[in-house]
Length: 222
Image (cartoon, rainbow, N blue to C red; front, top):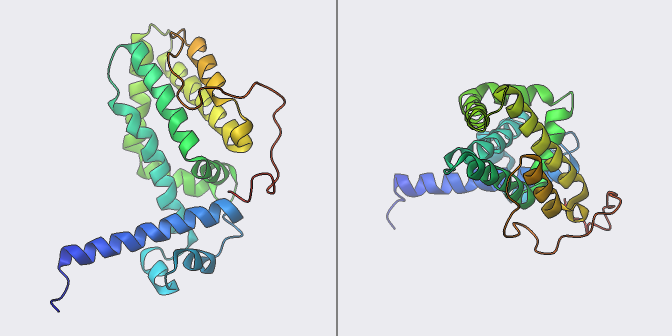
């Protein structure tokens, strides 16, 4: 049997690394950063502890990688084209669709960003990703300038605050949060034409009193 090529070995290494990251995300989302252990992650990934620590010496390195990917996901919205209104609508839809599809990631990111013990990790990742984040900020500021905003920088801060608030609520309340109706409301806030087609749910639940579900009601999902 001929030895594996360097390319095949690299592919296997990347597969192992992704499996470890996927397991870490699941374990962190279920148990929280502080309660999760490397043993939990190795068990979930089905790999040895030595392999995990080869790629990630500790939990902090895993978190830095996961947070970096979270921020990279936001900068993926930079390629939208069209009129200023079309681009803003596409950014709103991209943020909401991405959040709805990755609620465990959103919950983890929120907890890591806000907890005093892990906030410095998030700050460190922001420094590493500063170029991409600044590009996202400048793109939004240019967009609001094109729409005639008196203070585009403030509009960029407000827009991100609104969207992060929506994601925060969606992460907490999951299926009971009326994300499609909120989407229409955000469109109206920015004087955009009403969405023509549902993005997430053609018949969103009526707005009621939001209450968090218990783990039993969630069926054990993170």
